[in-house]
Length: 397
Image (cartoon, rainbow, N blue to C red):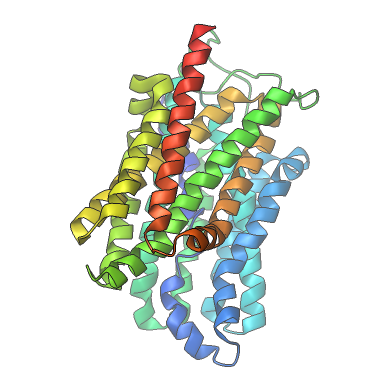
């Protein structure tokens, strides 16, 4: 593989570093509540969550926008908007200005989000594409963990300085423009799958999409909903459960969540290897293992057991997410790949925003704090069994 191809991959993968960073400045919330004393807790918390609303809208529109705006312009604009809007609170601490800036940050993220995934499916194929999708998921978790840590350290200079973390978008913009060339027709022998520059597969075809194709998109959107809902539910429940169960402090609960994120980062790096070895079994195995992690969390009576369960769950949920995004380019015609990715990302974001309501619904049936772990575990078991049966029926045909 040519050396410049490695730099291209670095430029492509770097896009995912900032996709989940909207909440990376949450550590400055206590000081923001004090600074915006007259606005109330809900209004101040809205400053942190409002990017996700704009992001869902832009992701939903990305497939339409991409028809009129070239990939390079779309990603470049998204990164520039993300970085500029992201650092506005460093210099201006007016609530209306910050609200508008955070909305713009969400718009920038939405412009990048779908493309950061689609670009891998469009440019690479085979084992390399699977490997890169796994690494891409790991880059998301690495970016989230790293930017959250840096934002916390910047608090010593003042809460507004935490927003400097978004300046990383300018570095990523430079890497993208310098290392990632515009798409071009296949330069390699089309009979040889070296994983670089996929052969043009009728890029312009978007009409006459079959019902089967749309069902595939909905299937992966539902899977994304479940995966992200699981992660957010764990984030909401683990610290509280640890404290109320009397097995640790809220800080120790947060440490468990950090370990879970890190385990997801590691598993994403190995996704390509697991997909190659397990093939069709990779999804049911990952679902079954994630359910084991959730059952362990449900039964946990110590920090160590809770930590083990959270790490198992975090690792295999990331495997499921990597599977989902690596399978999409294979399951969909390239003409609807942008649309498919956008719908799946909307499903993921809906999973994030509705997780508290899912936990509330579970609470009406079982008020125990760990009931959510058990419910999600049972769903994962049922889904794993369903996928196994489906694969067996396919093999008989």
